[in-house]
Length: 240
Length: 222
Image (cartoon, rainbow over all chains, first blue to last red; front, side):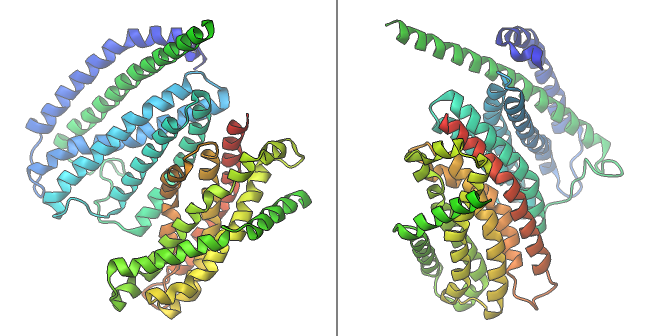
């Protein structure tokens, strides 16, 4: 962790790793999508629409995962004053929001033929939607505060407050209502889904994870560059 | 402790003597409750069914809209700067201000809401559970609003941002608040456990909210 505190060192590492990460992402996406669209059988109840799941479920996993990354980075920034942690949290948010939106949109596309409605106020949809709102609020804080140092400090608190709230929202919404099928991959007694469908799903999950890693590293790199530009501008104004 | 009480008393005093305090929040609450039947149609059966939800949402909105007053004035006139240097830990200052907000705005609303329920044809049996739920839930509402207020205190247009940040945090309170407001005798008793969970939410926010708001305020005060 301390090793990455130096932006130059981080950039060197990111530049070295990025081509591999992108390559892995693309390879895994091709394998996963092939498995999802061609080799896996149509579901006996859901028919071909089951294939939406291979895009939808990993996106939902990632939306939660990225929020955890964001909260972890914020905590590291708060505790250790790690200089890149704020940049990591800031750049994770838009990516996570897009994953969250993807999960909501594909879920909605799947819901139309399955439930007969684009949107159903069921527990998981609702908690996912709240997560999406939390992402938006977090990004709004960054754009509302002009001074970057202060924005970072305030955004940490917003991220952590949201993170504490996510499980509570999940729990409360479950209590409120449930129409959605219960979790079928991660549960006691092993996955309840057939192997022919499970492996493309897991490969897609892995592909999304690498995609996030690639996008995240790229945007942290961009963030560091933006900081440098800012400093150069300030220095130029100072010289005048 | 004495100093904290003095802080609460000061805030309450300011709130009562200044116009635009709790009275305005109550007026806003009343307006929302009146607009709802106009928007939904005057059907008595429908209104009775949605009454607790309508009252809860009006409560959330009124608490939120009054939230920016928790820290704004003291931030602008520099009192908060002085309080950071005082003998009271700054977290306790933040807590005192949230409590003052609860006492001056949220609690009066929680008392008034069930009484105003007759406007939306609220089941009379639901008045007591609704009051209990709101009284307990409003503690959490005020404390969460304090986080939002602290996070946006130095921004000129914080109002909308507070809503965007805080409303998602209100979802659990709303859910358990509503199930705590069920009149007795309708199906299994979920009101009591919901009320207990509401109390748990209030206690958790009692611990975490002062920490978060104090940290956010400090970054503005530097």
